Image (cartoon, rainbow, N blue to C red):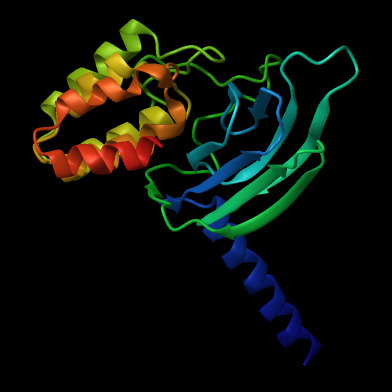
Length: 253
């Protein structure tokens, strides 16, 4: 009887680990920072993906690879040792949104809800991008074309910087050679896992799609990965129909 119970427990653990970190597609998660204070906040996220941004209102980082991250939220113009509202670990789970709220008094609170906009990530979260544990810089082994073992074929942006021109040229070339929009979206997913983009780069990617619904899906994937959101309104030029432009503004809001 004890052996049967032990086997059942082990199988449960194995299935959970496979679902979160095993091979195959994985549903994304997201992080929402709700800023109700009067301060401009500096938000820094490090882990499977890295991101930093200054925000006055709310911030939504969508399509995050599930896993453990370190999140720091502080006042942008804080004096040394002061104005830090949150500094700790958060766990992003598949199809789940982590919400960190900063109230008008600078107090933070963490809550969780379902992420109804989660997407299927075409990555192996256990190995992709391929982390080199011998690399003391904490990066991964860059491989210009990928080696079939989980390394990102499109490189990795420097922190807070847009995708390098050479990497983006290769990405755009691959998208243009891909026949179906669904496959192009998978390519965007792969590139977005460890890269950020300018609005000009996003516009070039949108022009590779045949249908406007798929262009909107592409924008949804890249929403939290755009370096110059102040220029994001220019993406409306990639759409013909007003209804699509309205949906674009909803995604970018």
